[in-house]
Length: 230
Image (cartoon, rainbow, N blue to C red; front, side):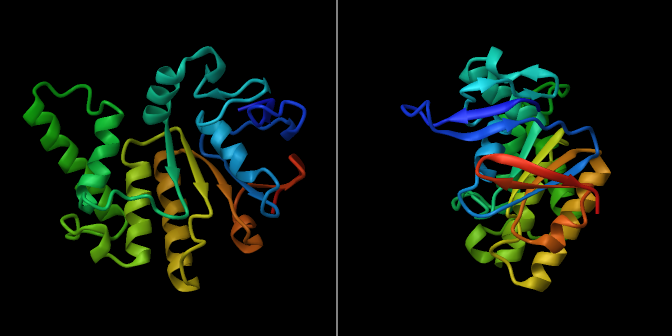
């Protein structure tokens, strides 16, 4: 990702991000801290191709998002990015396994298994393995409402990582959790990122969590300041 700039639609003279230049390498873990409204979430949305920069360029896994139409950006995002939201965003009518399987289906994976039944079976196998990796073995058949907040966030992490994305975008992934559960979820996220050698871009208000990553930036008034290595 590099040279990010964004203006709200209809207000091109009021940029949210200014002069942002950021690159993440495979396996690198970067934290963005800053006050609410400083542009942190906008940066994540740009990196995922959910919003469009008013100028500059966003590259994801070597592809320029500006050169793709909306459908192309969506396909790329589903294949190479994983997003962990603060509010989980699980589909309430799908059980934990089905929520994770949906990520594979949307990504078109597996793409090397012939036959619909075989593909569904493989998605189920991969989803169960992803849930087991986050400590939810045997809970795949439970609906989100039957899971605790920490368990729901673990499902969200499994969903984000099941397709082994090149980039993980995490927006306050422990913000709705108590300190003990939050620590468990954060450690799990780092472990899974290391396993898949994914790049991690984390937005957080926690200086303690940010200090465990490779680089820390502070977002102030739409600008990234002071890259630091803990």
